[in-house]
Image 1 (cartoon, rainbow, N blue to C red):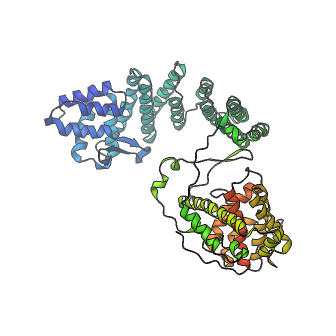
Image 2 (cartoon, helix red, strand yellow; image 1 turned 120 degrees about the vertical axis):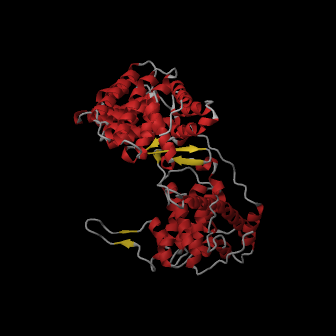
Image 3 (cartoon, rainbow, N blue to C red; image 1 turned 60 degrees about the horizontal axis):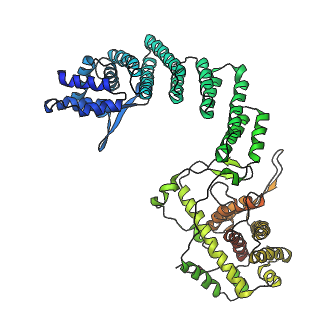
Length: 556
């Protein structure tokens, strides 16, 4: 075993006495001028001070990020372990002693029982020292961390006497925090969690903490949840009511999105706890909230597409030989938005990487985003491309109106199909186009959407099954629009158009979901380019009914 150098030991003790965190201890020891002759021991001890525990139990590991590399305990050399062992015996400061014993225990070096006791008692004896530190908050946090480490060691290695001592000291620290003038709810929550792991009943402490921190609703609710978990079954309804009531009271004092979030949380808690009256109260309050009252500021800018794209879109319509040909030309066979997208990592920088939460404006109810999927970014790009395509389609439809000025009869003749779109329905769809050109976008969308479903249903009728048979007490039923769209590839239609229509009309998680948003009255007037996309969907399906195949022109 190497000889302990007094200068190194003095510098280590001095740094430990002055520092209130392990990081500060490592920095002060690294800055100590010990001399080059003792550099090996200083460097070995510095590595030890930088290593932080991860995980718990017998599989606990230690690691740290040093300049240029990640260092783990398993990387320690035999000479380093010997140096740690020598200073673990010689160190007078309990934290240094406890930390070095902890490292040696995890590394399996030396006497296991000696390291268990040395590490646990070292951490326990560090607690009162840290509580006397000038920086109160850091001292409290350090003391709580030492008690957590000591408790994990005592529980893992069945040190009954030390385990009781950890519990007593943790309770004493919790009492100390509750009696102090300053608020330290995060440290208090950590202490209660540690006591629960030690299987100590924290009911009294949790109740007092909930009362102490009642001014912060989230902290108050967190402690009430701990109390409900620890308390008797007879109090569960009482405590659940207190949780929901606290959220509702906090919501009444707030405005904007914070109010909405608190009401959503209250409604969810009431639902999960079977508190029907409080749930109704929260849901009724949510229903009185509209999108404008959330206090959001919309950040965006108009899409400025290259003029070349509009020139191409207009030229494609200019080449049409008839009204029907011009209508069909708005929808090519290969959907442009579904072409393979390049996943450019740069597009995910900045605000694009912030997790988003949607608001369903019918409530409005907060809608959590779906579970992350591997193709989320690709789908996001496809939806953007669909939206951009809508601007080109709107330009083409306006040009059709400008060039042909079709009457109702001419539109009906161009659109009608004996089987898929008989003349009465063709006249209805013609109304949608005429409303579009008049700027009555609500009317155009509401008329066109049912016709899209009708056309698709008729196209698929002879190719794929669309009706589920009765099963038990469940009656049979026809497929709705989403099922019809997903059946398109089996019927021989391009998979890219099937996916595009799904994202455009019925995908509630990642798509535009226009059919449901419009038909359920969940949005205001659609922008013109999105109404154009609905009309384009009808034209694409009709072009197949008429046996027309539009060649794919080169895109500039």
